[in-house]
Length: 316
Image (cartoon, rainbow, N blue to C red; front, side, top):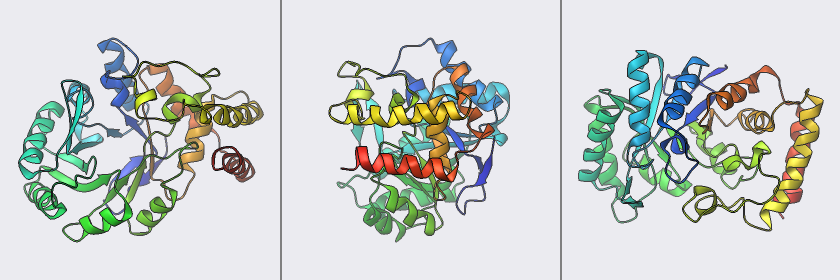
């Protein structure tokens, strides 16, 4: 595993962060609780010390899984836990509110779920136009002063929203969607990194489409996040991505038949403005496979070839 400073927080984090949306179970593949808990355990054993979760991930179930594993392993001081506020999952629906009373309640619930008395990085999950950001930030600053959270960040914010939030407190992290098949946030990520923020990119495997698993367009149910949230499996984008995947096949063979997921992770973490790539997987075998991304290096020429293909196929 490779570790890197996370912005100006003083944290040194693994360049792969474990994402737990899928592990929570809702809107993803069905796996037993034992398999999900083992995936978290495997990530920590493989050297991943950066874990991303949220109360919105199946009503706090993902947080509970993380808390149970970290407590049982006795390694709370060895990992950096990221969770979020402002979005909850209630009766199968996502409910958004950044009202102070909601954030205070969510924070206490997250602390209980995670079985800890502090959260390393607390993110505003999504902006909430119905609540003045000054009120939200005042609440987060108070939680920070109380020692319940150590660092404040944002996810899914625009540059203008980050600048506005920064008027009322220190924003130390930015978490956007970013992958070979979703580069819309790239310029903003570069800007945020220049401001000293740690950047953790989510969706690095394109909801699995960059692993080579899907060679024919799958039909997911409407509740599956691969059809609801991610747009990679819709035409004509799916067919265009398959052209990129075919190029990844060639690069994989050059490197001895490596898994395509390692190419997608390598491509992401080699970007100088990315601190850590969030990868959500649910099996020990996939965790270990993904951690093998650091056993080799994507060459500058290969990265340039991939970037050119992305521009040709996906940025038309």
